Image: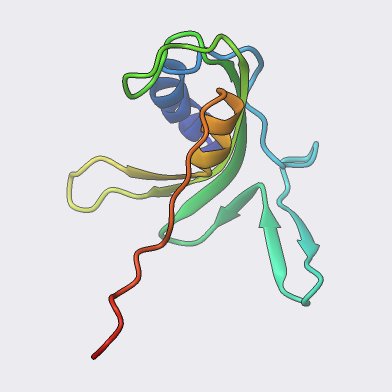
Length: 128
């Protein structure tokens, strides 16, 4: 199974239960299935699509769905939701199953659902 198929299956299980899909999962792969890269303004390399390392594989994704189920005790808003993220698959070690790590900007998702959130980074009290 290709990384795209494997990760698509994982996302379908994890995101479909909260945001039923309205379109196929997209990635930043070009038509040949080759990793697209761009250079950022500061000269660093930005990887888009599938990035493969001997031990770890990752893929950016876009999930389009509808907030029709509700999540974390919130009533559904029935609004369209576009979830952008990056998922990393770490191969199994010694008979374990592969593990997946999803990186999603949840504040953006909640904003699309009409939820506003405010937070502040905890800071220590002043010394003295």
